[in-house]
Each structure stands twice: as structure tokens, then as C-alpha cells.
Length: 314
Image 1 (cartoon, helix red, strand yellow):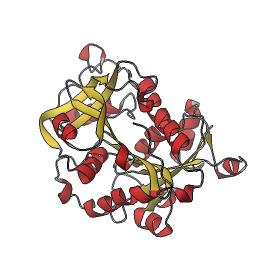
Image 2: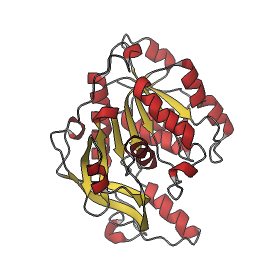
Image 3: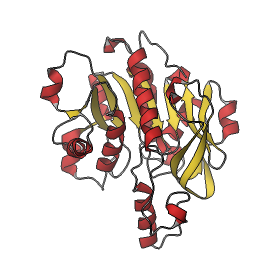
């Protein structure tokens, strides 16, 4: 089944060319099923690129997905055209006022790792969103900084600055093969990493109700489940395109920023060679499993989310 997005959203043509099933409002209305309402709070500056990346993953399941794009109410982006934002995004204040509920919510990363959480201009509204998810969202997926912020809000787990950027593709161990979220996963998988901060396993272990599902000996915990808050936190980037790390590396080189070649990404770590994508299959598995778990546990009557709540399995 396809993902339902506006036919004039750039992702519609991109995904159609890739063979991902997409449909517009008229087509979706003719199907006699309840689509899963999945929202994305997009905190990344390159909105369109991020839309494509996540729509590609959640649109590859057998279920119909109704995607909604949300932005912070007052924060404005300088990297995406105002027309695009006005056409496809709603501020959270509008969503809050409408008392809407969603089966799932993705909270993306943001390039503000160097700031303390409290120094982020939209921190108080983001904390409001975290609390709102407990009554209006069946399952929330926090990605990179979004996951770090959410785990900090609910559990007080801190992020820590690294002496150098964790940058490249790193092996991760499957810590809980029995988890439905890791259905089909190998014992090891490779995941792109691009961050200046880390979460520490001992602090996650000290918090109640957190369960680490994917872990790297080199870059620490990656995927953490939080059953009590019906949330997942992932600190790395399964959603990345094949050339996303290359774009970041080329940008830093062009700006004369000190940066290491992303490790285990180019053949023989040679940036003159085309990068290799070795994470795509596990990316689809994880997001497909998440969507499947939402489908199996969310109330059919969406108004009952937050009232008759069934926990997701860890």
C-alpha cells in the first residue's frame, strides 16, 4: 500500500521515480480503510531532503500512510522556501488547537548539538510537544538530536560532547533479536553516524524502563526503546541517502573545516571513489517494523489514542 502525500510535494515525484507507491488525496479517499496518520516534526534545515528520506522508509510498507508535516510555531528556517513551508507545513500551535491525534510521530534531528537543551530557542515548545505525545500520539520516534532531547526530557539522560566528530559508518550489534522492532535484523548491521555528541550506556542503564536494542562498541548506544512513553530513540541515521555523508564531508572540505574522512564509507576510505550504501536494507526493516507495530497496537478509533492505550512491544 502507498504513502499518501500531496501530489505537488517534491517527495511525490522523487518516490514515484524510485518505485515507491504514492497516492494523492483523491486516490486515498477511494480506499475503504483507515490509513495510519503519521506526523513528522521536521527540525532539519534542509526540509525537502529530510522529507524524502523519511517518506521513502515509511512509504515502503504494505499499509497506507497519511503523512503530516509539522514545524515549530515560531522558529523559521532559512534553508527552505517560504512557499514550501506555507504549502505543506503546519505550526504545532495549530495542531495543538485542533486536538488532532496521530498513530505515529517522527521527531527529526537538528544541527544544534553544541547548545545545551535549555539554550535552544524552541526548547519550551518542544517540551510541550513531548508531553502532548503522551495523550495524542500512539508511538513517537526521536531521531539523533530529537531522540537525545526526548530521552533527556523524560529521563534526564544527558548528551556529552565528543573530542572529535563521530563520522562514518559503524558496526552495531543486535542486542535483542527477539524484539519485534528488530524482526529480520542480522546479528550486526552498519549505520551512518554524524554527530559531535554521545549518549552513554551507563546513564541509559541507570534510567528506569529503557532498553538498548542496537549498540556499537565504537560509538555507543544507538536504538533505545522506552515502553512507558511509547517511544523509540535512535541517535544515528538509518534514513540517510547514499551520498548524505559525502555531502557533509564535501561541504566541510570546501569550507576548510577540519574533518576526518567518514570511516568505513568510501571503498578503501578513498573519497575519490563513489560511497557504498550498506545500511539500506536494515533501514527499511526498522521503519517497516515500527509501522507494523503501530498498526497492530494502535486503536482503530483514533480518538481513543491516549485513552484506551496499548503499549508497543519492546
